[in-house]
Length: 330
Image 1 (cartoon, one colour):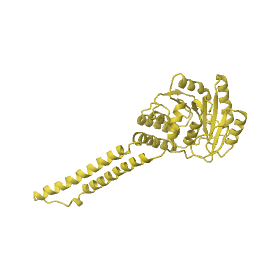
Image 2 (cartoon, rainbow, N blue to C red; image 1 turned 30 degrees about the horizontal axis):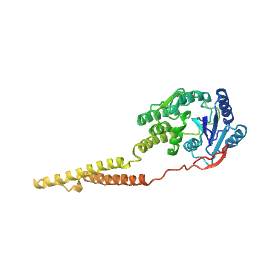
Image 3 (cartoon, rainbow, N blue to C red; image 1 turned 120 degrees about the vertical axis):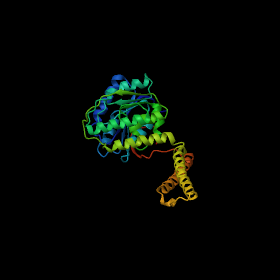
Image 4 (cartoon, one colour; image 1 turned 90 degrees about the vertical axis):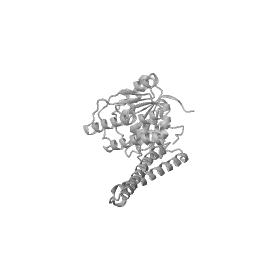
């Protein structure tokens, strides 16, 4: 039987060899001071430095440490997905490995889940130590995410979050791409609506450099749109494609009928007329009709695919594990 712990500290990482020992010792100190039963779960997303060797060493001296190493870099979402599936804690707290997130925030994040009964609590880095080239796109991304999703958080992309175990087990199978930026939205649209926020300390990066570029904000924005579409129409694609297809077909048909009626009226009145093919509206109507038929067919095919689709499985490949007795379902 899998042991049930109070806390899982889940840390996805990529090339963070300098910070891992210090982060581990800091977390252990906080756990010891508050007498938590816990595990520290490192997910090495295909690091090319000595990160995995350090995780193996930490696991050999601390039985609370477990680790998973991917055979290549799959991205943070895949790392969190595998970590969520493997987590044994009643509360799962995610944090970055670069020491910009403070483990001293853990007790309050844990309390908000256990005592305040939140499903998810997201950190808010109200004061950031980042250049304006990063903070400005972040504010824009957060504003768009609030507008599209209706989830009122200031900082969707903060890596420091706490989750009720039921939440991570429910959303893990649905994650893909770069959805780690939008986990509160995914959780909310899966029925976990008690989402809170806590102002957390943002520390200046101590080692190395960030592994993410500005393209993450573009990808994050597109992912919000994808999540919104999938949530609303994945089980009923005809409602989306069929609606726009029908409207397009009707507009094209009305234009065609109007051109025909206009020509017949002109003929009956002996008024000079031009051929329908000489009118630009003819081609606009024709395109609208064709587009409408295609959209309707897309919706029809989507409906058939939904009815025949099988459960999605994770595509990340695990190369090694350390500290595991039970198997991870992937």
